Image (cartoon, rainbow, N blue to C red):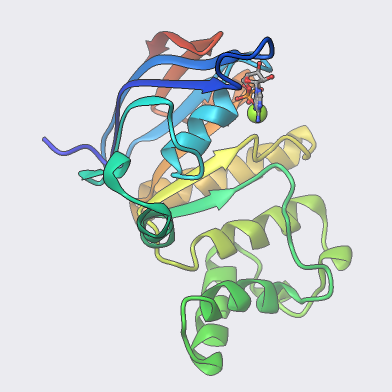
Length: 228
Ligand SMILES: Nc1ncnc2c1ncn2[C@@H]1O[C@H](COP(=O)(O)OP(=O)(O)O)[C@@H](O)[C@H]1O
Ligand SMILES: [Mg+2]
């Protein structure tokens, strides 16, 4: 069976050999199937962001293997990694990282234009994606004219610009109040269930685990168990 994401014996050591050396990931073995919605949970400093960045091909592991959709990423150079990221992965972060002078539509359309699409096509697709995340009525609003939850919706629409297979979220509800967090998680769940995106969210918030069909616990860079 080919997994959408598989890691084998992944280790990540920051500042190796120095007094500041940190073993951030230690022998991480993960198998994630297409259509899974997985929460990676652990305390602050446990290695969650490092793991997500390794899975997202933003960071190379010090050793071990990462397969994305069957592709062994260890063998790829920077361009190859960028291609995997660009084709397969949509990222959502705690900070929405929107361009403040752009409207919601322009923020999403910009990401689509970067893929080489013409303006009219990009704008049409951006509108569709904003409708998909429930923001069809706010497409001409700038980030400062949107609530935190609405800004995160724009960021989610932007993450879908490249038709990714995988959505990776790093503490994506970390800046939101409880009620809004729940709504955003439901949106992510819907994208997973109805549209088949494979989702991995990392968080220290136990509530996030409730909407996932698998929970992986990490402590000091090691997987200490799973649930569900
Ligand atoms: N760029 C870096 N250089 C050195 N140490 C780092 C770096 N990034 C993270 N770390 C360390 O690696 C460990 C895991 O960090 P991180 O993956 O950010 O954890 P989490 O996201 O769970 O809070 C922590 O001890 C952190 O201090
Ligand atoms: Mg983190």
